[in-house]
Length: 399
Image 1 (tube, helix red, strand yellow):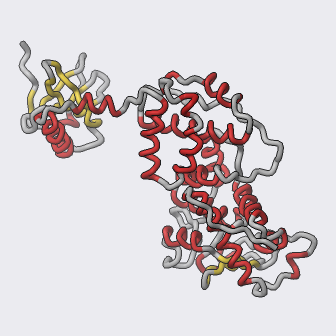
Image 2: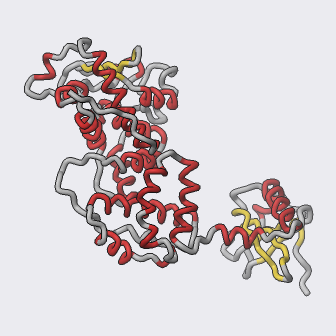
Image 3: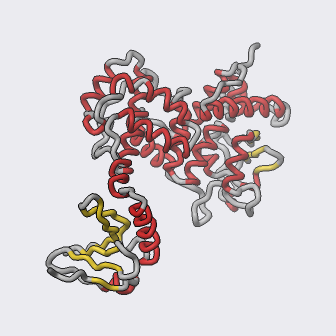
């Protein structure tokens, strides 16, 4: 029998290992069970190999260029400790990556989502409507035809779109995590129900879905999109928000351009003053903008204004499998929330700096300060209540 190829592994030795005609192992003489496998292609990976009930078990640690030998030894030691306790780590890993039914997969996704955001409770309501249809099905067997049949059985077109979007999130996550043998998201490519209105406004159940999905756009773009939704200001003006323009809780938008600061001016040329609610200040704190030097609040690594919000939203819409959404639709959603809470169209025009029939010209920037502040906080509280999925304590204004 061929003698095992043994060596006291070190990083340089592993790098220098050359491929052969067939795959081979080099065992570490320091850590029992640890070996580096070299493929004919040159691919190298650390493995922990042990015996369980007379059969060899292979536990993949990582690619050889991903961790050091010292890290591989530490992880191998932990694996072999479990083996000494009578456990089978390779089998346990395989079991943990396999969810036989859609219900099991959804349960695992819930545990994942609960750690990431508070919006799961909203998504959970949609997923529960899926379980009577798909709960006992093998998750990997659910096909596009099943998605189409599901949609046809739901009378409300928008609700059907939202339920399929929730399912799509679960399948996309399963593919990323290599779970349940799922290779394809069956929700992708299924035509969603068309809506009659060209103006897009997020529904209550969509708000937490998108709020969570914004994080896929990266920290700065995510915070920019959230600020648009929380303040209702024009996306281009939010992107150019500067720390110098924020004082005592108010954000002042100069009507005229300020080239030296990169400020483009407001769309209608009117100086505008916006109260930043508590939720918006939390965004500033997370970005460190309240204590940073003068500059753009939403800046890229070079300190320039952030860009490509439309592209980020397109990617998010595609991942959720829902109707198209633009940054301006977030502003429209904020305006719709203002009127939905009973504050009236004049209040919406005033807060969003609309020039409608000359009405924006007659507003004194300080005359409505108290009312604007109250409206902005109420609208933000409404949005936050939807995101957190709790009871809605926002009381609409009655005139």
